[in-house]
Image (cartoon, rainbow, N blue to C red; front, side, top):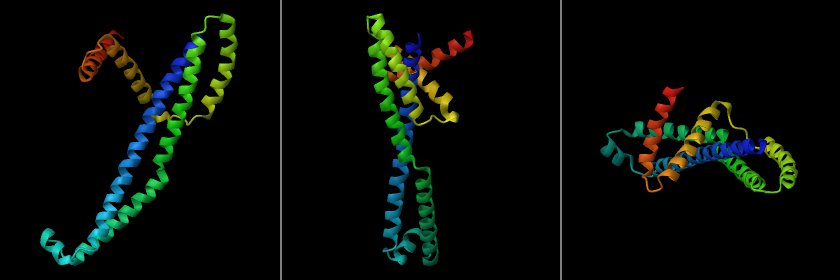
Length: 189
């Protein structure tokens, strides 16, 4: 049934967009915080006596200035790169995409649970229109990342099934079991 396929696609895309949103958010936060800390340290070094730094690090005052200057240029260059890659904006776009998909998933589940087949058919047609509209407006998944993200989604689904079978199991042990089981399935292919 088309609605079941759409439900699986939506679920997979929610996982993909969530992963990308988290990844871009972590990258953005890491580099922004690192740049702030390094900038603060470089600024503080300007006020520290060069003879004290020379005693502690054995770097003469001329080389200290050179080092601080080069480090400042590198920090500035990295901040320009951060503006260009715009990870924070990418993270937000993928977060919004996953939110829109989650609304679609909820609608899809509601339609699938309808008992009246005529009503189900009518709502399915309306859903198909919304589905196509939302899918076309979403942030695109990079082709280079698609297969890795699809694989991550299926691992998540299989891990969830394992957790359902063994609710008291330790997550690490269940992940190891899933990993080892995947090799047995490869041999069958």
